[in-house]
Length: 125
Image 1 (spheres, rainbow, N blue to C red):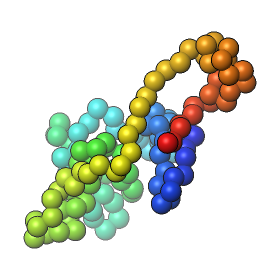
Image 2 (image 1 turned 30 degrees about the horizontal axis):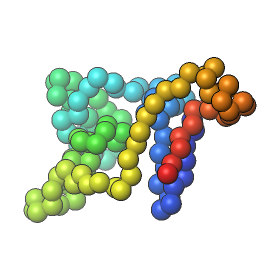
Image 3 (image 1 turned 135 degrees about the vertical axis):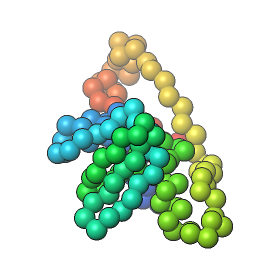
Image 4 (image 1 turned 180 degrees about the vertical axis):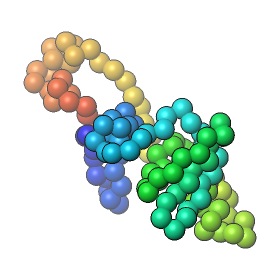
């Protein structure tokens, strides 16, 4: 998995790379196409309740569910039982992401030997 450590210590990586690692390199299951409704933390496990009525248990919950994260919403509601904080504190980080594809042959012709011809590249401005 290719990642970039940015100023402040945060790391970005491609969602597809994360899904590949979680689904192939770890023991357990990756539940895709499920929407988390809420989770419960018990003594030795986390119980996941999905909107389709299914439940699952896990030892570790990783909230990689996007900008409108249900995991974040549930976590924040537990941190602030009074309800005074917004449960969806989305704000602009000051960065923009632009994605594009370039034919490998064209890239190789313009920049021979460029590493993007053989591995995923993330460019940060």
